[in-house]
Image (cartoon, rainbow, N blue to C red):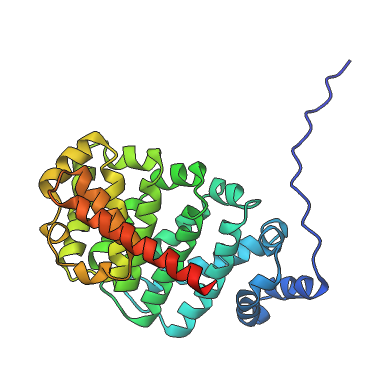
Length: 308
């Protein structure tokens, strides 16, 4: 008796689509309507909770989005990207972010290595603050940020297998304030996983690359929002024995003195994190910051109770 052929794994059926979304997707697949449809879908993506699986499982839709991304590669180097082209691709990236954020499509999104299509946008010269490139860089960072927000080990494992950490460090070193903030948030979320912490601390060279960029940001008039992420990165590094020993020698003096005292008046959490960091690296007087944070938090709770 002949052996029956193995059954092929079937792709999940595309979710049920509202009529207006089905119409937009049909128009998306047509070249002459695509730019306007990208705008409409990007602006109204919150109105369609199942937009991500609909895009992922509707034949042709992901291919269209990837075509939009690669179409501007020639404009990256030498830099010749125009505002209109950047806006169009950023609308496509907003839909890519929707797919990356959805629990049903996140893993197949990673398995298809779609984030790699964004890396050329992150690798543009970070000192270029021209609107087309900065908008493109920020939107691409937003996609990676949406991935790491999920606290998914599969996401961190995938990202560590690519060049995302060096790319983020490059932006943290020379990017605009907003780009630096998002890139530092991504590194913070990667470090939050043991996989990420062990990756950064696996060799002296990797640890030094991260520590040097963090130190540079602290010493370069670091804004409050950015400093919050920098301190969280340092604090997480102290949970690795070798990194903790190294930070006892290389933690910036600006974090040990009163350089950022003005930030702590209205940010009890940052005050607490810095106190924990300084305690971990055995800086005298660290307990004073923790006590200040506790007083601020108690005052905030009392104020909230009075207004309740």
